[in-house]
Length: 319
Ligand code: SF4
Image (cartoon, rainbow, N blue to C red; front, top):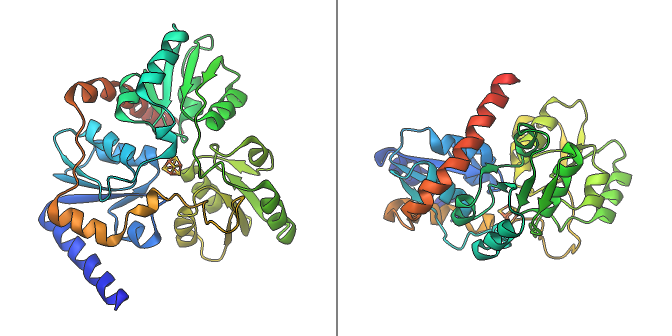
């Protein structure tokens, strides 16, 4: 019965998508079935690039609110839909606009670089936005003596300081999912599979980053498993990405890094997993819930996001 309903949802979603000239963008942390129905799957950088350049009238975002807001900022003339408005982000919530304004004021003269995982208001206060895919490159593209504020993720911020040696003041925010991985459980898995490579997202805490064979954004971790000659991987990021890793390389094995509390399954992002096939179906049918961002915020937030896209374009070209 369930699979019958699911099949109906899938074909109905595809029919409405074509009829309404909609595009479905899905983040790597969505469930496998949603990734498979999407027109485009990617990390935050790739999704914002896609949102900025497509011919659809409607963007349905299978992801969390800050991502859908970013799409709306980049394509304000389009209708942007998010199937569940409760799909928030603990990292974005850890940086409120009023507090951040005071923080900027107390560190005047610094260039404000914010991670894409922020509200539209925070983006509007920024000079450049970045993602984990391009944070290091964006910072190294600035003159070496430029003083920087980085927000909101303290782990990614510390990772960037180590990588670049730049003068950076870091906001004290974090993602509850990436801080949940257990170093002990990862090392136990490694003992069981000594050949396994530990691959880690930079939002993870330092002890987990220190045992990593490779550190990178979600898409870089995927790329690493594609080109690496190894067979086993312990993956310390949201386990939704393993769906793509398996699609790329079925003969390899991937183990989701275990969380500190082995009973809670909390290495999965509860916000990302609020999006279901049924909600996508209803959202596309009703064209609601829809994302709205104040025009004044759109205008201010466009600049730092477009700067990121511009710098990232040059990065790809120079590869
Ligand atoms: S995994 Fe963390 S940073 Fe990503 S959406 Fe979920 S709470 Fe936010």
